[in-house]
Image (tube, rainbow, N blue to C red):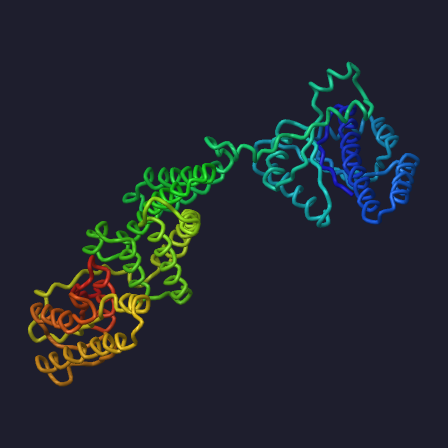
Length: 524
């Protein structure tokens, strides 16, 4: 049971010939499959006589009663082909003489032009046909008939839908077998009914990758247009788009050559466009002074700058937890794909290839969701600047936040390298005692009620402290934790007039190169 999609033709002979040979081609394949099935049955039962008898019976049955292989024939007409075939219906008698009922035909008139509306009708009708074909049924596409527009669209749609059975009558072969025209016998038509070359063979030509590049080209053009829309003056259209295209070419080259190292090069290349997008967003929405130095920051530090902004002012419909985890995943994927040697294990190759593929949804997420949220954010409606220590009045009380740098990373290294629980106890105790010692130092300098919060490697306090004292606090933390690593741990300090400013300042301090920074801000 097979459905046929065939285009109309103003030549009723050619139209009828194509329907008849399509039906014969389907029956030919079905008969061979049934013969094979009965031979298998005879072999499995070890009763060759029975098997051959059954086989012979069905062949005789077929010769007495012509089988109708096609269950539906969907005809897509132009207005001209519909009129011509209606005017001369002798083709109907001819196909019925070959066991093909007129009732199988489902006809639709769609004149294809370069207009989008006509293409939409064509695609909608194909979708209608495919939705009506039960799962497991076969489908054959005939490309013998129709206008050039119709043939082109039907072939493209068949490739996209992965319909393998595309056939057409090869006129060159036909002319060698007969000089006759009109209704032709099946034994002449069948040898000329040729399977069209599979379009996806182009993908297997290493130096072309044509169809894949066409698909990616459309995606890249769309992504680039969204990138430019963020800031037409500051965006680098040529670099962003061309680099994405170059990266995909490398990825496809890796697919063909099976050279794992090429995937890493592709991952490194595409990360440059991704990082440029993040730079553009920071320059447009972040603190002016910070943006001026954004190019010197790592990709992870740039992501943290944007994260800090959302953590301070999260839109009600924004999934902050997903945002953090997605950033962490992409950062890990990017770093693990670009910061290693040339040779790749299968696992590393997989991560490098995934890094290239995931770059596109990551760009989508930032150009659509993050950009939109930043545009609506309260924080972006007012410019912000870095507070300088010289701007602080002597009588002014500020809030200060201290946070140990990379404590989680140090703990991870201990998990992997240490088998002695005493080492863990000692490290935890040193950090706790370091924070307690600094808290005592601050109380002594500022007052008993100056420390607001003290836990783990975090400290929140208030007062009016000169830069020299803050530097002294950092030195104390490093010295008091020197037993954990040789040089001691570092800490970052952020400050401002409010808790919100402290929180954001501390986040920004931890994005500075090397961390161990002191940042003060005010939100204006």
